Length: 491
Image (tube, rainbow, N blue to C red; front, top):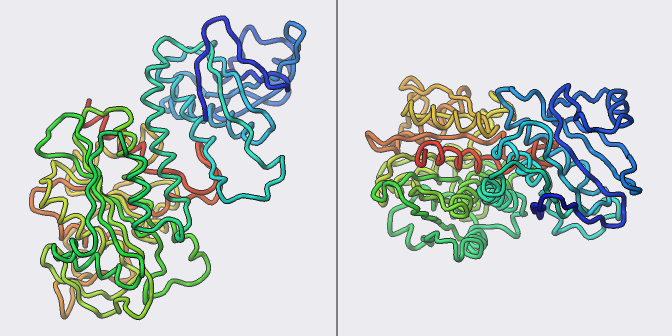
């Protein structure tokens, strides 16, 4: 989506169809300069300006037919005003993405918008406009995307500068959506790394890649155990952005990157297994967040780590009952090969602590179905050993709409992980599955290390369109991590 700013007094050129002009409208506050016929039509249509509500009509201006669109932004003093503004922008893209219109003029005069608020409108428009059509070859004309540009007029002073920052975040979200959407025959550990190499070239991000021999030398038996059933070799990818801050102790983000998860020998049911291409959503979010931070030149030192494997059930796959030795030296009895994400993460956590001695660690993983049973698709779960870290992440989630709900941890849950043959099992009992998964990961966190675990299984993929995304990959996690960096490391 091309978003450009018009000079004062100019209008965007049409594309042969009636010119489309969109305006932001506060709730119950139609613009005073709106043509009476449009105002009456809007009221008759019960348009009140609620967040994301849209009305359109036609008028004649200076002899030309103009298509006018009103976008509801809710109450001007609402607590979630920024999110409502995003919905307004998103409604515009959703309406015209495949409507035969190539360009729209967005007139931001009228409501009392700050530069930040105006940029949130544009962010919503760009995020909702993302769609992957690379594999569609038989679309009818009315199904094809047509909207390619938005020309902005009447923007508050300073909007262009703020938008440059938000545009970098949007690029990160789009990259994550691209990674999560790609099918597993296209995106696997090696091609994930290759795609990152291409996207991060020239950004100032330093890349480090561990192949299978390097991981074996480091003793990463847990991660390698997951990978051994696939012909696709695993990779451990580190992306480091040093834009300032505490260079000695960076913040580390770690993402689970199971590029396809069959469940291994503990095979998943066939129905819905195709969705398991997005089991790398945590790694996708980390990669997208790192692209956003580099794109806006964040004044922070951050390392993003992606543990990349494919979990397959061939003759070399690990079996239920196998015992593996993690990089930390702790042994794990693998009761269920479909509880593989924690085996990938535990070695990545150990590696991160030994190499970077992080100030704080945040891991993201599509880890458990139990978190979906608990929180549905509305929140991701957060588990943490550090209250300030958990609070800062939750605050970032509220600001971006990528919401988190904190769940408990405690020694009482550890009993479920007791093994009769090894230091621990990789699964607990029937109840509290997301909690016992977090308890498992905590065993690989050094004493005194601030850490938070985000179980994002219900939020990386959507079965229906949402506020700023279409059906499919949401890009969840990028904006959350970026806002956390802004507030905590750059604030």
